[in-house]
Amino acid sequence: MADDFDPQEMVARFRARAEAVRNRGLPPIEGPDRQRFIEQAQVDFMDYAMLGDAQASIEDGVLVFRVDLRPASGGAEA
Image (cartoon, rainbow, N blue to C red; front, side, top):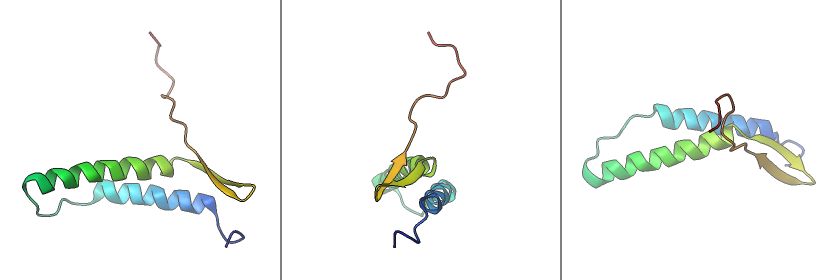
């Protein structure tokens, strides 16, 4: 499997999943279930988007995701 595995393809699938979560509609649910659905969708999007932005590689047989969580530069720091 390792010979056929492309980590960048996996990252692209996570990027597509994040977009799917962002664009999916809200099912006809009400009350607390509606709020739980919305909260779970937000968490799902964040997780998928984070992995979709990752740099993936295989190092010594280990799949490694590098995700830069530093704030974007461009603004003046206080």
